[in-house]
Amino acid sequence: MEVTSLAHHHTPTYTLGLLLSLYIAQGLPAGFLTQALPAILRQYHVSLTVIGWSGLLLFPWAVKFLWAPVVDHHYSEKVGQSRSWILPMSSLAILILLCVAMFEPTSLVHPTSAFVLFGLLFLLSIVGATQDIATDGLAVRMLGSEARSAGNAVQVTGYRIGLIVGGGLLLIVMDYWSWMAVFFAMIGLVILNTLPVLFFKEPLWLERKAKQTNHIQPSRSDQLSSVEQLKMKVSQFWAKFQIQFGYFWSNTEMRAWLLVLLVFKIADYMSSGMVKPMMVDMGFSLSKIGFWGTILGSASSLVGAALAALLMRHMRRVTALWVFNGLQALTTGLYSLIALLHSQGYALQGWELYAANAIEHVAAAMAMVGLLTVAMDYARPAHAGSDFTFQVCAMTILGGMGYLISGYLANGLGYTAQFGLSAGLGIVLLLPILYWGRLFHQPPTASTSLHIKQLGE
Image 1 (cartoon, rainbow, N blue to C red):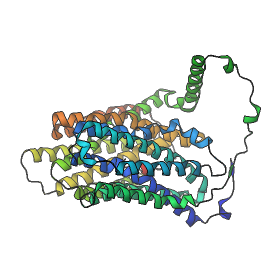
Image 2 (image 1 turned 90 degrees about the vertical axis):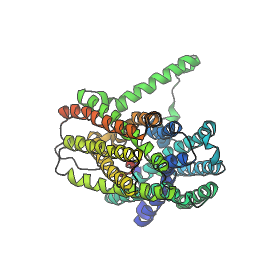
Image 3 (image 1 turned 30 degrees about the vertical axis):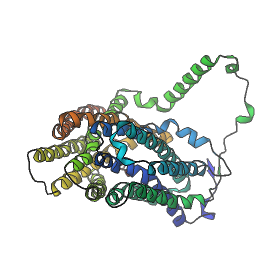
Image 4 (image 1 turned 90 degrees about the horizontal axis):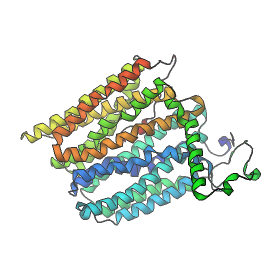
């Protein structure tokens, strides 16, 4: 692919500023979904079972690779390849947030009302995942090789700012502002961070591939019934899917790695969705949960990511993966200990729970860095983007199931048993890592690269 040179259009500072604004706008709704929503739902007396079902809201992020080719190949040249998707998705996000702002939060205690809200937020999640595809594509096209390290830093920073504001800061102001005021403020922030791309003139990315659209040959499909055409399209899709992603189940080592990906986040998701509801049930205010739980947790994640990157310079991939993941399982057990002390009448001062949350975030970030580093090792150079995206999506598919059942477990067993079970399952799920480790061949010169944007989601 040949592209027009950006050097004649925009300075590097402008480019990085544009990307920063896009990732902040994208992180705001994501921060609300992943960081603030569980605490807010519990504050309005929503059952733990229903809160667990909120994990389905993240499903679009797990399967976004399915429509990524559509985003890549269908656009208006006049508007711009990425702007053709970013601007409509931003507009839809604003409309959905406007509907959420009009929602009556006191009605959330009724499951029907909660699931109406979930429907709106599910649409918001689809919009966010689609915008993420377009924004990542714009970043890749705009940044030359010499600017990608700075661009990645901006991406991480912008998305993290969005998570902190949409998650932690939102919880803080929830104690002082009305529901409507909070979401109108979020709408204002999304609009503010969308303005740079609205006035951005995206270059035309020229493809040198021959256009096939003007040479369409008559097809036998015109003579087939609707059912037969559908079967043929499904067969064609599966054939393309096998060609694109069959690499991940092509041999014993790859199948073992795919198993690691599928089970890696189950135990983590089983616990993470219930942490903030437990804080609410223990009497902590939303403002304290927002600052100490979300903002401190996000900062701890960055510390854990940096620590893992440093340690992995001196550790084998296999060792890092099972040590970091084992450490996360053990630190999840700290929540069980805190819940046990509270149930026994111990007067918690608050710092115990905040410290456990920070330590667990450090360990979770370390585990994620280890996994994403190996994921990049397995990404083929010619398919680097799609291979990496597929692995990240595979990691969240079954992990989301852990989130769904977390509410049932906490409601039926209590927080102590629920977090204890999560920690125990995390230890058991080290076995697929150990099995894969027997088959893994360490790359001779693999760098510790990571995609920190996934941390804390």
